[in-house]
Image (tube, rainbow, N blue to C red):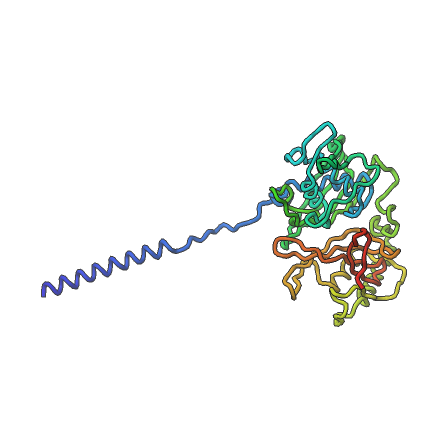
Length: 375
């Protein structure tokens, strides 16, 4: 009897020990839950922490746009190379990409492409060569012997840039507003707005610019030492009401016309002119001009909203305004359409909206640099 009692007690002790051991084992394996939520680090102005270098990119675009009065356009070779020259002088030697020589700052082609890609999201440095340097441009040259570009040293201290706000759209894109001031007296020179997203450029080395600007616009010009009378809209009179605002009655006419054009632009049930189509003919030409935003609304109505996921591919629609283009002798609002594919941007084509909103075309640049419209 004693042996039985002792055996029972021993079994009880053994079972208790096993339960305790199992309990400890489960406790060790239980995952720890952190109450801290991971967030993207941002600067005080809202820029992502890894986008500090983009302030130099924005300053280059703001300075060139303000001084020249020209609209942001990747196909404007003067604007393109002046912006590159400014950025190389502002940031090239500081980050070790460019080397100073007696003739200027030398930089290899691959690095110039990265700088250009950061300035112009519409420029695909992975697939395209750098454009020719315009005749008469004295601040950029190509050394045929070394294959390196040489940028003359220029003053980049005349202006100071402030990023006032950067809004994360939660889809990989950012909206930025800021101002350009004269360094001499702190007087406001211009206000600007821009759009930014992760870079599409793939480098064999470390990237200095992890983002790229897709749209840029001088929204307000306060003064200009280099041009007293020239305004951005004077380069293209068709864009006067958009760039200068026009009269209130003119804006109302544009809005009224835009609403009519949007209503009659395309039957929502008609899918015959989707992305494979090239032309969408809407209301008759009324002679009234719609605004850029109204043109964008027409694009989104036909091809899907900006940031919307394409149901067939799962890719995200992205648009970038490239300015006013001349196609077959007529003026069009020009939008670049791409897909956000996982971690990179894939260019599709350009979409052109006539100034009165009655026509939408699709096309791309031909090998001769001219626009080719899809039939």
